[in-house]
Length: 456
Image (tube, one colour):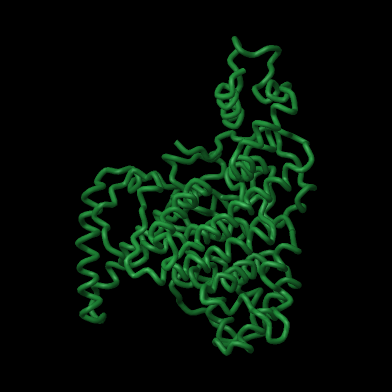
């Protein structure tokens, strides 16, 4: 068998297809036939795969082989280390900062295509909203002038993309908790295998990108590398949040990983990343960094712990946040608590807000708050939704990615679209799962790649 035909066979396996009757002996599936190939050949093919491909496909190519999971983690972490190395080439070195950031953006899209495509939608919508905000009465003349320029660019951008399906009814949402183990690991390979080093590396990349982009007054991301087919030629200047796409991609990558780490009860990874014991006296405290990514990660996990009434984790996270506020004098825990409870209420988590208020023993009356703004502050992004049962929902571009119908809902008002997704599928629970290595196998309907997310 030629290598290219073998690759096609693997793709067909991952698409969950069977040979036609003419090509099938005794009802054997493609998976059966691939397992008949020598282990040495299967190892060669697996080792040729990149970090994403290996984490996706190696469990199917080498089922039951020891070390596949560990090698998946290693390949992904090595990729993240290389990204940090690339970001070391900043202005002042032999590579231009714009070139470096666009190289990294291209690598991000290859590594996490779903997350980067969703991030693109996010920054475009935020760009539109920010353009509107800049033009309303009450802002400075300078801001209004910038807003007018934004509108002119936006008008040209929208006119250049009239009729593009990216702006049509082609966006849906996937409930990650309704995906079986194979579906989850194929579509979210980093989240599936992330350990404490993975989480820490994502945080370091976030910090480094924030530092590099701040120093570039003229950085314009090359959004063409995201392969959306959109015409970006009119967006020729750096305004609003377009340059923040890197940070949005990292958040959309990190938070599902954190969610999965919590659900699979990998407490050591969680404790290490969130630095639950606090730094030693006078030591380095990652919570003090300007990005606030760790703090929003902590409050993201606090939300999950509250939903699942995990009183020990609630107590530990509260103490960790209190330590931060006391040492760095950046607000106070009391000032944090009530707005956080308001945010839970704004996202349909009112019952859980009452539970957390009782644990905190504070007086509290709900008040209105901007759900998007508070989600950005407490969870890092408003492009992910946490449902009342702790399930996590992410938008995806249905023209490019596909998921099983039972895990998908349409984009729309939260109370109209999430109600059907609040109940787990028969093979998934909404609470924390069994730790990695002890999980229940997927049922027969959850074969690797069946309706899997596949880039066109």
